[in-house]
Length: 135
Image (cartoon, rainbow, N blue to C red; front, side):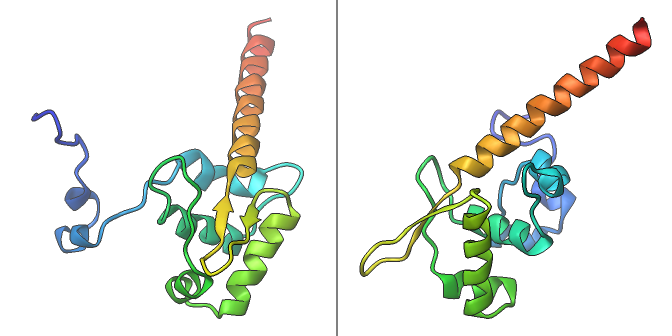
């Protein structure tokens, strides 16, 4: 296998014709656990909003897509996209940085922290179960 060649190429998982449009790197842990977050779980709509935000996250910097862009891609109204962002903000998973004459920045640090905390708790629970079985 060549150095930059993936063991699991996109074209084999999806379809070669879709590869040129790009793809989004999403944590499997997020996909499998967004509904288990504490103290507030995410709805399916909120999770999809996060997925669409991640489409605009290229590094550590907060993504900054417009609501119209997200709404169009999700197939919802601008108002619904704004409601999803507001709901995530009320749950303390998202911080919207309002910018004049620019689109908002969407900071997801608290969501990432909540996921890491949940993952740590899941590992602890697994270790405890194993310990209990071994006793």
